[in-house]
Length: 396
Image (cartoon, rainbow, N blue to C red; front, side, top):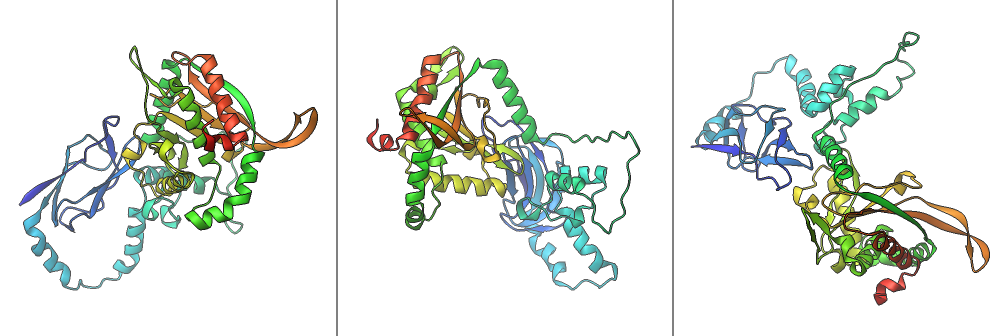
């Protein structure tokens, strides 16, 4: 029986994807649920499993092609399973070339198409690289890093001609292109303003230092700072619901739930997974969810449903040392909170100059529906909650 292998259903916000690399060739046996190919969308990389065991008899769509939901990618003959497996049981005649060729073939298969293309352009041997992608695959970033590394001391150096102006052209990944498109649309379609404030991090830092060991022992996850910011943001959004709202045409949609997006860096670029119903999550729940998302992002296993929706976002440029920035709203949301690096600064408390660990906060908001008053008060509410964490317990 011949069955079709089709593109899985995509989310409403994802219309198409790009085929990366077939893991099987025509004529090879496949097992049920064995991954046949990956599809890169503008949000995630989807794995396409085999619906049944059999033999891959036809590949309809080739590597690099753009595909849409429910499109036929290949065909499998389920009745040919036994016939295909029988020859495999017989030992193949040994050849001198086989042992040397096998490792190279295996490593070449581990290079993503964009990485292989860049490697060919830059002269990097992908067989010498340790891939950082899922299952050890060589990513474009791995090739870029190898191309920019200085040559080993023993290797001959090649001097560039005087006045040389080298450059290279690398196509954007689908994710990078989509991020660029969405951020440009955000600036063009939203009336974005940013308000700033600063927060004394000492109360949170003292609280964390006091309880971090007990917290980790009790909950099995480290106590970070992001969970406090999520809780403080939710408390502020409850006071000023319009900051948690979105624009739909000429309507304002007020959300009676709090789905907070947390910006996370990944080998493929920035992703913003969602903490759904964050108001119902404990500090431990939030910390565990962030750890899980970070691992999934690193392994390339973030799912579309992890990234869909969201009513408000938080981004932490301070992780990379940023002192201040103006974050861009993630449509269709209407506001985003920017965290930054914590630095000791001289501040005045009760008429005295003291040194405190201070962080600048930024709240970018859509001025079409959020007035300056609501934006400023929202950021002040976040600041107050962080500087006096008891407010979060007492709902003040």
